Image 1 (cartoon, rainbow, N blue to C red):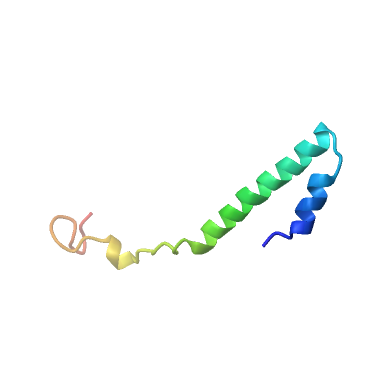
Image 2: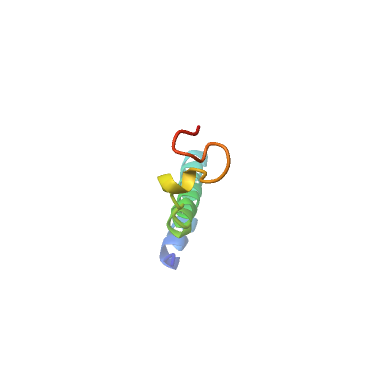
Length: 67
């Protein structure tokens, strides 16, 4: 999934605190973003209730002129 050469290059690169925080932040956003995208793609689509399913047909309010 992740190319080991890229990890080796980043690990061997000399960087100051600012660069380290940039790379760490980018990695964190990537992981969180990928997890969110995967969740959105795998969750089932919610069922929408039709107009007839919302109305009660029995008891008070079930008639033509009911509330």
